[in-house]
Image (cartoon, rainbow, N blue to C red; front, side):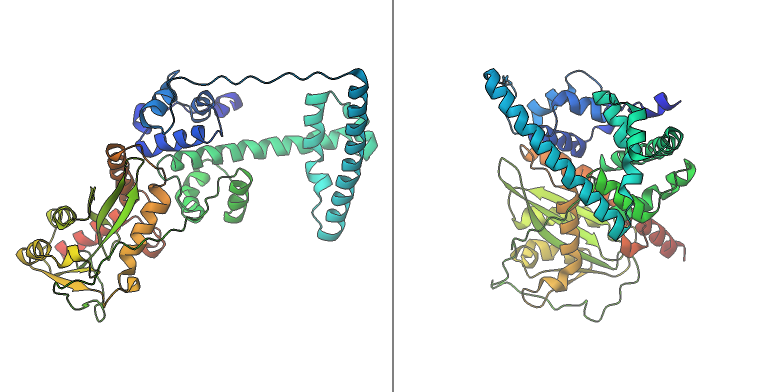
Length: 408
């Protein structure tokens, strides 16, 4: 049974979305693993599937892989003896320092490192270097029975943690930078079903040990030009209490770079449910392209209740083509007072989530980036829980509350 549980899961082609492909490509191109190791680690079917992805979506030339050979050095017997004596002296000093560190840590901080990791150390050295188990136990005053019992407990716990790691990797295939709190919330029910006992703090510690924690990415670029002669509109959100979906839409534009050029992503988000209801990826910030995101949002509306459209004072939102679409659909325009990003904080926040958690790979061209945007927004709407939504997804809140409003 253990062998079956430890086998890596085989995945179908449906699991290989664009975000997953770019994640694998990124690790291979950084030198963290070979493409064959990537196939084995992630359970990817096909002998050359990853190599095909590297050639098609990667940023390096994989048509002629370079073969690197290690140079062989020669040394005289006297040099060998001198080198070995120096290595022995260094190892003795290192051993003395490490033993002193462990003693200080156990006595002053109560870590009990010697007790906790002794069995793992001995069994690993026994396998790698053939060290005698009996002699090791005698040197440290520990019985072999206690050592075996401790190792059994450790093996059982590591088997449980391996299941945790596989569950985390499955989620990270679609949401590579989802936060650990949200990750724990999503997986907590599966932990209970599989009988895995792990608290949130222990979950944090395990992901830290396995280097699976994510670091925040900070970047800021101004994309709004508000010093123009077109008409600006008042900020209607100052005294507005948002109580339902399709009451307030917020819009913004952010840039996304590929190796081909800089692209611009226009977003329209429902302020109540945080659902992205309209989006458009384009090569420029023209009003003709930006308005396509608004038209997508209008097409998906489920009610005819009053609606406010809030944005910054950018040229695109003040343009005649954009305002005409708002007027034709009975939507009231609302804008920030001057250039104040905090008055459009929700739209800025959604931009940040997409760029820091989903659009983290620099695509080869606009076509690949468009596929990644489609997958990312669908995952954000249907899979990613929000703290502000009591850990529910935007699509769940949007559909549930819209249905209640229609039936009520």
